[in-house]
Amino acid sequence: MWLFWVLVTLVLIKFLNKLSNGKCYADTVMTGKVVIVTGANSGIGYATALELARRGAEVILGCRDDKKGQEAVESIIKATKNKKVKYIYLDLSSFKSIRSFVEEFKRMEAKLDVLINNAGASGMGLKKTEDGIIRDMQVNHFGPFLLTVLLTPLLVKSAPSRVIIVSSMLHKFGTIQDINEEGRHGWFQNYCNSKLCNVLFSNELAKRLEGTGVVVNSVHPGQVNTSLYRSTLLDKIRSLVLYTFFKSPEEGAQTSLYLAVSDDCDQVTGRYFADCSESSMSWKAEDRGLASELWYMSEIFVKLRPEEKI
Ligand SMILES: NC(=O)c1ccc[n+]([C@@H]2O[C@H](COP(=O)([O-])OP(=O)(O)OC[C@H]3O[C@@H](n4cnc5c(N)ncnc54)[C@H](OP(=O)(O)O)[C@@H]3O)[C@@H](O)[C@H]2O)c1
Image (cartoon, rainbow, N blue to C red; front, side, top):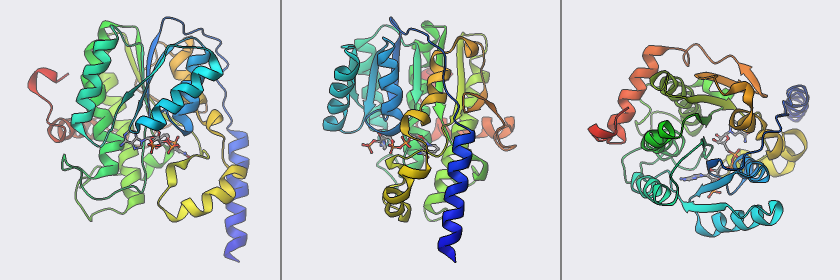
């Protein structure tokens, strides 16, 4: 009987994915634009980087594995003939690595047009990192927070520029209470919490950057067949069924691409998108007080220096 309901659920997901297969139709050429995509060696990030390279952008892949990062660069160059695709080592579970990434990026580039905070983890660790943060929480929120804040002066200098933060519809089940308390939340709740942080962070950053020419938006990519759910029971099920029922990484990349390239959204900021159109975020995500509480908490957790504050 349970198998029947699993099948019904999967068919429903397939049906919803077919109904909600938003596509980026903008034909914007990105030559001359500098773009960072984090977690670009696989899944949605790889598909996003590939399409941006195809449009002529200089794409910098931020990945935590040298071999996978280099392989992704080679494969994108081979597919697009765009030689301006590069890799810089970036481990979001280490604040030291994030700071080195930013330094190296600034040595290489004088501007930044688009920052896509795509990398994410789920079920990879509820233990704390060397920085004292629950691992998945650091990879999904505190790391991207530090990365973005450190790159903000360059984004402002390069304006008009764009920041895209890949969240999830699961943000609707998140909380920011006790988000760094070991043993307080299981892996799934932890993931939902981190995705709520993504939307709150996006909203607060958009507010703080109003009038600077930097627009900031968050994204739900849909249910996508990627390796995100590794190390969990879902991993076993994934290889069997996700291919059939979920979106492909190329389909999952459409909303990030839309926000990165479309002229329709060059003035839109502080919004949440799914299927290449604006969508409704949860009431918690809209809470201004919660967003500034998270911002303050994040500044402390990432040990932001006074001169780095926005
Ligand atoms: N797939 C879905 O159904 C779905 C739904 C909603 C939202 N999302 C979001 O979409 C984004 C992309 O995920 P995906 O589905 O494409 O999964 P994925 O294929 O597993 O990609 C995740 C990427 O993040 C990287 N990453 C993990 N830990 C990292 C770290 N410590 N430092 C730097 N990079 C790290 C991974 O690198 P490695 O390959 O080295 O691990 C990988 O490149 C995530 O933010 C996820 O939360 C996905």
